[in-house]
Image (cartoon, rainbow, N blue to C red; front, side, top):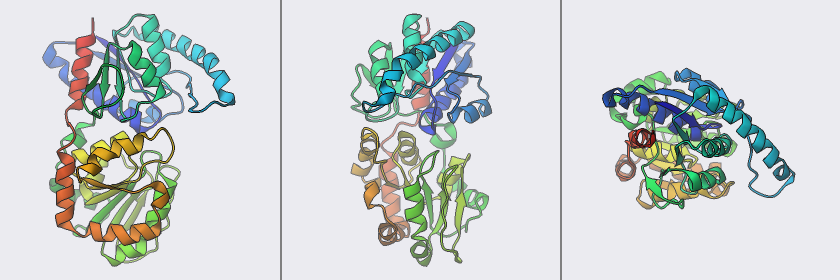
Length: 360
């Protein structure tokens, strides 16, 4: 069986794609199935690094940005899309997939149209509570539609959860805490705040939290701050560790080191934090179609996290709110328990079984 997985750009698409690929490869021998997996991306996305590192072949097609509002680029979309579909069909001729799985984003729309033209079984997975344009189109022609959050407004949606890596879904934070804090050069015993804006970082988070470094240190809270590839943070120096890194490959260790996380509310951030029982302060990205707010609400409503609008996230807010929370182990434990009860941890295998079922 040959499977083509289409998705790329940021970790929001590549992480569930790779989690699904690993699950397909892991389950196939027990089902007596030989499987070949190929990934489809664009030349400018995170997939160019993480997919080859994970051991999967990667095919590339031109990106087709889909403007959220009418503008000059809108008239170029049909021409770009036609060219990308042509390139995708050429990939199909080389790879000869039996099943196509799409995760949305720039690369998926050409894959959906090509799969329909070749009459190939198509599965769409939507990461966010509010679906993007590519998946709204893809869901109309797909055989199966999988979603990460209940009540996602797509036709024939099946709630499976968000595929996450087994290093996250099976993480025992307490067991790895000492090793994780040593790995990042943190104090083994201090309450620890993790800050991350996702795979690309977040300027507002970086500035607001680093500006509150003094208040955090005064409360004894150390910080592991993932600023993103182009990001930076300039916290005041002191005796309490404030570790700044550009990127983290071992997010399992980052989660294990932390007692609390301040993060955006992309589907992966919400799902992974909840799955490992890590209390969160969610700061939804203020652009887009409101999907990050909707992603975070179930966890926040259950008591597993706090929600702060991007405009309200200031160093003063961080200083007045985060130190007290990070040093309250009873409240953190209650929040972690509430969050961990919400999300499926086997979404990778659920989606993998859909793939096997769809194969002719």
